[in-house]
Length: 276
Image (cartoon, rainbow, N blue to C red; front, side, top):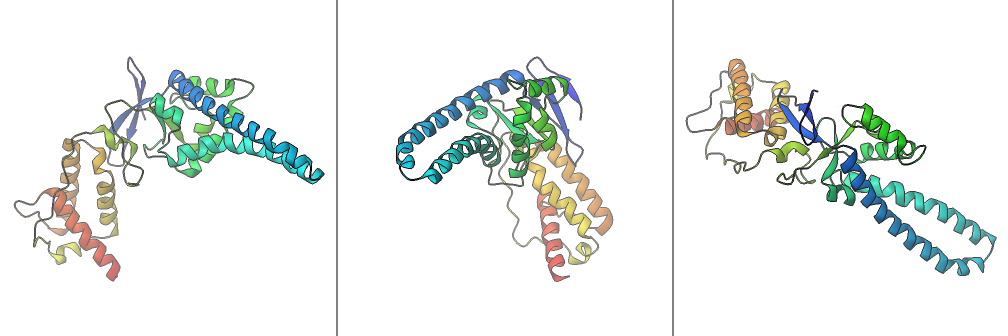
């Protein structure tokens, strides 16, 4: 990965498996502090609500036994920890790498590959949040952010994650489409998917000359093609079609786009894989 300096932000350049570089702005100390401040305000409100609740039920617990008092002490320790750790972990894992603070600051957490984070990455980076806070005011985390090119704190280094900016004019893929990456919103005005012409098929004899490795290449292209500009997408499709043509002799018929041609080949390869 390479980095370049822009007036606003550092740029993270991610090279995809198709050898296409995609630049994303990396979030620095300022925007991350704003997001953290907002999140702490929300967390503080939740803690205050919990304290008021404990104060309300405390007289009731004390009337029972010392066991009730022990439960009260345990809950008073456990619940704030769950609220603190769970707040960041669950929001980032299930809300596209964002907390309410990050959403307002227009930043999010992603994997170094550019894909969204899952529960494991979120748990890892937030488990080490306590270490990043040492000795006070996120001193360890701030030092790590300044010393790393990708502005990562310890939790990010352990989880393999980054915090990046969301530009206002960009939209990101919905969390329901796991095949798309964070960068899929970088290219706007993508055309609607083409429809497959009726009766269009490719020769089965040619498809049989292809193998599982070819299907993996095709599936990888389909999963990431919305991440690319139209020019790059067409270039990659032509390269894959040329490689398939050299191995199988198959050609796209007149009037059939390269994308539809590749989709039909992938469909037949999947059918052959099921039969085998």
